[in-house]
Length: 102
Image 1 (tube, helix red, strand yellow):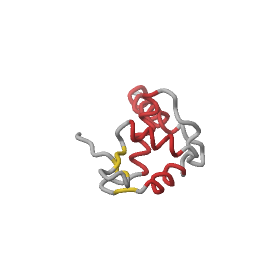
Image 2 (image 1 turned 180 degrees about the vertical axis):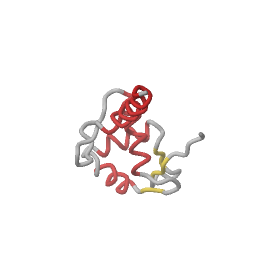
Image 3 (image 1 turned 90 degrees about the vertical axis):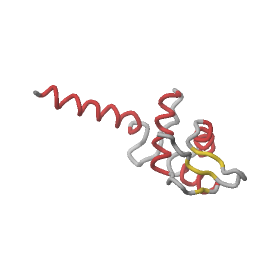
């Protein structure tokens, strides 16, 4: 009986720990993960929480949003572009959250 309730709680803690333990108590990112899988998980979280769908962002807006969580906003921006989570508009003047095909 206690095992069935403990399993979902353990799974929830694992999920929360996956991204949550990367942030300090004040919401700042402690470090950008080196492991690709962990970094991808972080980038997906940042995309979901910082960037709305169907909206263009100027580079300063992207930088400000990312700088709110970590001082190296240019590295985070590059990772988001490389991972395909953010795209540049055709004319290169702004960024947009990538559309998913799920």
